[in-house]
Image (cartoon, rainbow, N blue to C red; front, side):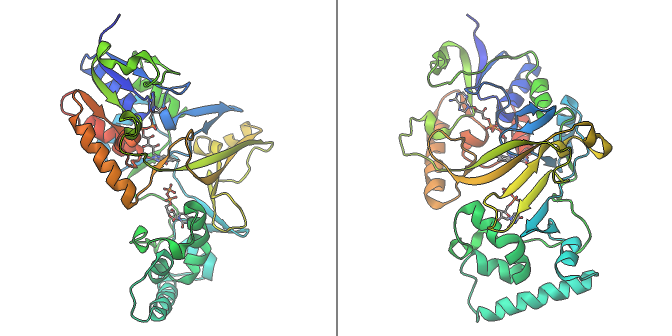
Length: 374
Ligand code: FAD
Ligand code: UDP
């Protein structure tokens, strides 16, 4: 029986990057995952020759050149730029809020005209509050960007996403709502963004090349639960509360469910991401996966297209945990679990589930690259 330096539980970006770094310094790893595939949430499934983001659309973005160079050393990234479209009752608007959006909304043509329109609506909202501080998300948003942007692009989308009225959501959720006074539909402000050429599985395959792995292997119900028999150290990227047998209580999650279908048409919506910002559609977004990786005329080389509707869903046992819930009960409980985790000898708790924190992909990689002694 092999004895490893590390047993890594979870083959998502945290586990896979850790294994890669460990291999670089001559350490032996075994990586296990309970799912039937490697890659965690960035895993893609090929349907009709198209990479389908099975666990939700993933767009890599960072301003950190070290991280960008690192991922590009594993697989080259393409030129995908995220520029979602909002569909409000059939009318289309560019996102994020920029001069294109303001022109579509009000017919304004210059930044001065747009600023004046927003300022007029902001002042109306501030006046209506009568000197009161904004008490909820609705009041907060209207005082930041005015009634039109709020009602057409924020209100119902946010209500669908959180399953609660904007009047019942706390104001602190949105401190800022950036408006751009230029014609720029690039959603991210980061210097670098893109999708791996050939898909995210290439990134995972590159990171895990030459590393022993086992899928369909749950840490808790396999022999690896007694990990000390197999390895000197454990890297655990599963749920932190599960590791401790939920001894302090269960942490809550928010999740998304996907309805994926094949459309018998090469170009269904002309964009990777379309947000449905009104209640007349029950889903929040429709993703057309081919637009992440296939551009221009090549779109028509594939006769079909794969689209996924996204529904914001309450989490119950057995679902995929996606987003930590950022409220008092869960923050407190997670802090208590993290204290327990600190006392575990030779165990590193990593990633989204292991730390109960939302991280984009780039910060996950950054954390691993920052480990001093692997
Ligand atoms: P995961 O990818 O979740 O990997 C954890 C792995 O551990 C899983 O494979 C799981 O099966 C395994 N595991 C858990 N428990 C056990 C067990 N008991 N035994 C064995 N294996 C176990 N980031 C961006 O930068 N851009 C985006 O556009 C973006 N979009 C996102 C959209 C959604 C819907 C979500 C949820 C996240 C998004 N992210 C995005 C964040 C990104 O998914 C995370 O940064 C990344 O997946 C974190 O990697 P991880 O290894 O921590 O977790
Ligand atoms: N949002 C919105 N309208 C949109 C897109 C986003 O009002 O068309 C708000 C909404 O409150 C959402 C937040 O912005 O919760 C963050 O959305 P984003 O898509 O940037 O992040 P994600 O949902 O992927 O975390």
